[in-house]
Image (cartoon, rainbow, N blue to C red; front, side):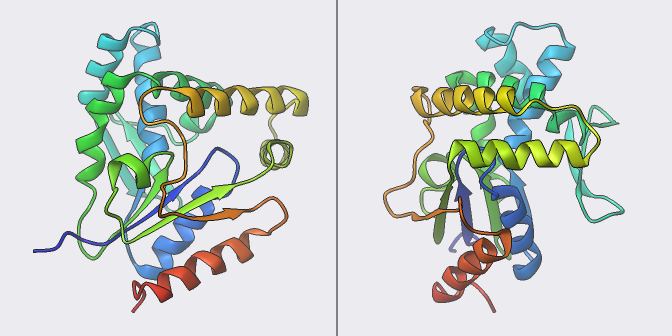
Length: 227
């Protein structure tokens, strides 16, 4: 029996992956795997246990034993529950994002989360959001998308998001953090950030999110993944 179809959407932070994936999941009626959330949750749980993020064995044990639940919230956004506590906002902070990038570079942590991610593959299909979904986690995916964008533009988008939420933000700091995170993700030895050889690649720097979503849906239709 063939496994459920998968659409993977990979790329660095700030390219619109999350929005595109949520939109596609709604359009197709498929569940969504936010793999970045698993790494953010691992980092958050490790920090709460006072572990050093370089403690590969300790952090991998945390990853393997995560008590996490993903559930739809009242507003339609994904609600993330860690150890019985709602942590959706906590894992979206810049601190959690940078910590996630550090633990994601640890091979034992990636190995601990690999099967957990693959278990999300259930009928009718799966939208997988991440950095190695098409290269490592679902190499046989029916459609692989890879989004890119200029680092300065991505920092501007993140800055706007934070300001709209009423949070303090420094554009200069965001540019530096994004560049550092990109370098870690691309240079790591375990599942480095890169487009799969058979991925459809799109630079979103000068596109609005509606245009990116429409591009993704058009490709899904060409692969006959949309009813």
